Image 1 (spheres, rainbow, N blue to C red):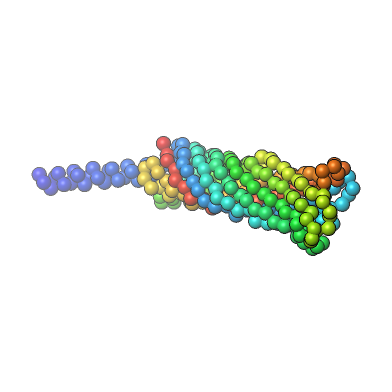
Image 2 (cartoon, rainbow, N blue to C red):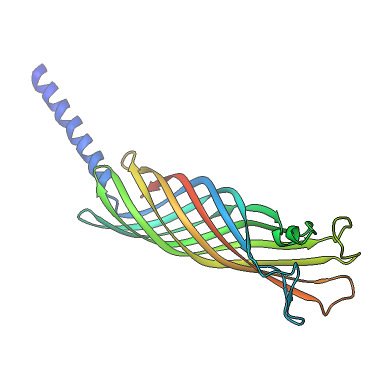
Length: 245
């Protein structure tokens, strides 16, 4: 009798384990979760240009770049469809991407007036991706791509302080704010922690397109109107957890 009871208990435990493993491997259905990580950004600025007079503010048309880095965190939700080992799905994410960076315009430095500073900042962002993956054991390897948007602000200021500047008391003041829209591409791995929970490690490359800053020189020189374009790309690494229904 004792041996029969032991066999029965082992059979129940084995069935429960098999059911849990099957549930863990069944990636079909909706899920939602949280993530956090870090983004390394590159901001590429054009030299401020006055189309009315046809010249650049610091005399050359050379582009310049600077780092704009920050934390990334938010929520994600999606749905998976499975066919044998192939997974297709759609996933949206919404969160905070706190990029921040600034640089002194090297064109101004080269001309002897190193006091023109360009700044870029961002906060809220969102993305919508299509995913394609392969299930291997208790893990899902996937690639993804889609559209993305970023709320951002940019400015270029030259206080014209002499020395070293030689532009008198005029001030270049350029500003811009925009919801930048671009594309993103990436991939990662997601591990089943049990019937409902998964953990993931994800890499995403974002190209948010360009933001425009514009403004005048001096309080009354409205005809001296300058514009500038700043393009932003980001490499982001995120870790997260998801709960599946």
